[in-house]
Length: 378
Image (cartoon, rainbow, N blue to C red; front, side):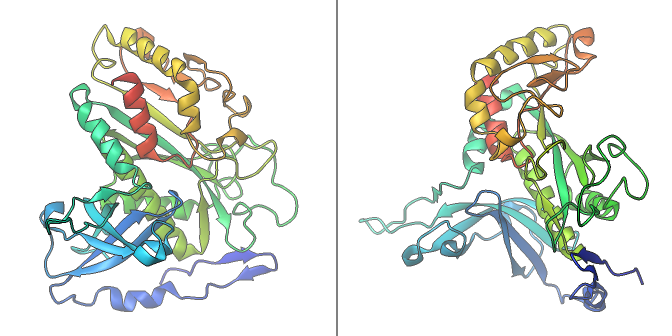
């Protein structure tokens, strides 16, 4: 039997309250033909993920086979108590790495329920304000001829659940300065690797298009990459990857935070660097010209993008710690201190992609990818 996860609090070693091994006694019990569908949606803060299980009589062949559902929106700050019902509409199916078998996770978005009209018919579902997916999907549909591809580098920090300090940091004071932690290996340098490895395997199983992981510059900070994904799948896969990470951290009684500056001072912040290309930028010979034209459009809309690139991002975009100041727009080849970084090989090969380094780690991928497509392609 694998050793149980242990957390460390302000007074030393704390054993977990629940023994995860006990669940294993029930995990392989026959489900008698039933399927568990874990419906997942975005809550009222637009950062919180919510979920609940629906039992189905058979596995769906597509999202079209899944029923719409509802929940109490007054408990998620998405509806008033006197009119609290919010509808969730299935949008994408993932395999469930926690229950296994034919069980699934269903990513949904949120709508007001239909209303009865004067002629007795029902109105169409109406998008609620916190549903950013619907507008993103519409923009991606308009731009689908341009084949927008995205890859997002999701940085995050693991926290001790009991004292909210980064995992493995001294209870008083700080670890050694940055330098030995990036892409590191070894005790005291790569902190929390078990969670990272579990998350990687779970994303594989679920069908999330994860493409890499590495330790980041601040101790207890990690990064994984999702993509390349075309269109709306980028937002779907990134939100599902976050859900899977939260679920794994439950088991270890550890928190994952996407705060863009979890520790003030001389420590790197956490970003959500967004890599982008279109059919024009990938075109042989002419792609480099297309990239430069798109960057000009991004420069003209810098303030608009900064306003939508993550809450608290002003604490991170200071011009230090591998960032460009949020007040200035810049771009450069192989420059990690610029707003937009172009890879060294791109001007040589005359085609490729570029990286928008401005988004924070707590970015809403639906908002960011929609805005990039609107600015550069629409």
